Amino acid sequence: MTTRRPSRTFLRTVKDGGSAEHVAQRARDEKARQQARDLAVAALVEAGVTVIDRPGYEDKTIKDLREIRMVKKDGDPKVNPPTEKEHATCPGHAAYVTVYSGSDPHVTYVCTNPKANGHALYSWNGETRLPGQQSGGGMTEEQKAERKTLIANNKAWDSAETVRRAWLSDSFLTRTTPPKGAETFLALAVAHGEHTETSHETYANLTRQGDQDAASYQRYWGVTSKIEARANAAAPRQVLMLALALIVCEWESTLNRNTWRRPADRDRRYLNALIGWGYKPSDVERLIIAQPEADNAQADGHEADNAQADNAEADNTEADEHEADEHEADEHDDDDAEPTEGLRAYQKDGEWWYRHTSPVTGEVRPRGPFGSQPEALADAQEVGDV
Image (cartoon, rainbow, N blue to C red; front, side, top):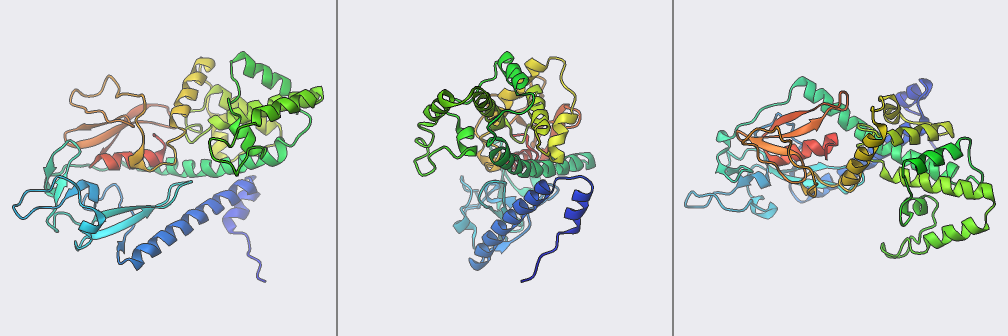
């Protein structure tokens, strides 16, 4: 049997003080994404579909089927976009595969040259026009570099979450006595009004106390009574450890991709506590500790918590399936801006923009332009703005 040698990147990272668990998890996640993509690509090829790489944001020729309209014999464009089957006979019919973290591969069907193939182009402001009439711009080098960093850190965060929760499950939640500083940690949580989850889902999952064979709505029935029974039978120090475990799991449940970009005061307290209790953080988690605390930490913490809750369900959905959030476009938007639901995006002079928060400075500024709303939504999905 041949033993596979560790990669140079893995050895270099560990030598430089990096966590072997985090490096290995990122490699496993990337391998899983690639395998899922390869299977989807193979299925498309077998079906006779041309597979292309995902178009870059500078590409103004290739268009998603949602952005085109077939032209009828009388010269007028059809009302609805073509289906995959309707467009299959077009010489420009193709597809590309995207795999987001924690989700199945997503196939996007496109036309590689709508203008050459006689299609009309649909604009998200309701107009249908030829591709040659469509305006659009490119991204600056600064925007490209920032986007690349955001995508890399989002992937790193997903891998770090797997490692962190494995450590909680295997090393922390199995403790019978509380670690040093547990009393202070709990006192601060009570002082800030931070409480546990109603159904203790994260605690049940990490301690394997939920009924995994039950229907989703029944999975956590009885967990609270189990916790009560354990608290009534345990020694005082064990009760303290139980209370700590419940608070830790509640805080863990609030973390998502937005955390490394806009951490609240309690996120720093949480991660610093885990590090003090033996957890080895990844580079992206260290960004939380490195960022300065806000002047009003408590108010900032509540604001960030609300933002995290709004976005938690949307992190791994497809870019065009985001549900509407409660935010509206900034009051300083241009007069002709048209806000869209699910993202602070707007249209100006036929181009799409959205408001992006810089992870470095915290500054909110327009990001774009994009040729269509799906392009803006896809970009926002990848950089974590939705």
